[in-house]
Image 1 (cartoon, rainbow, N blue to C red):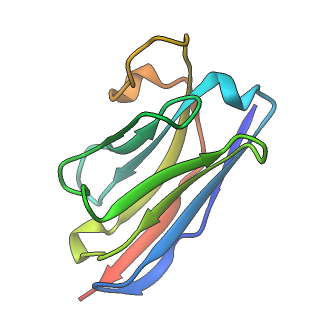
Image 2 (image 1 turned 180 degrees about the horizontal axis):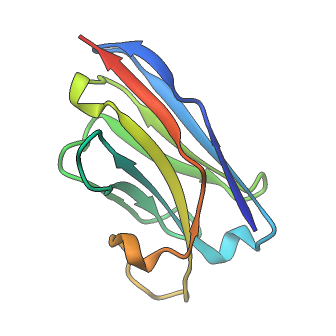
Length: 126
């Protein structure tokens, strides 16, 4: 089982980036997918999550209206479109997966996710 995140980089404030996370070794459509981030000196926090079929989403208040999570189950990939980036968005971003029963609510806690990617660094300059 592997999650491979990509798309991070250096961007100026108010710019955009699109992160991707490709899963392998699991039945992707049976997993809720989440994006988390960890800024220097801070704990890891959830950014966004999306249900198995993509109908339901969750966003942290700090990114609502700026970030959009989506998924393509045919390509085993989850995306995070980040617009209006701010210096405080600078962090290592991780994708994570949780095997989820159909009617479960979207998990938002780090310890609910059992599969993690390696992280991709996003740096936003002012």
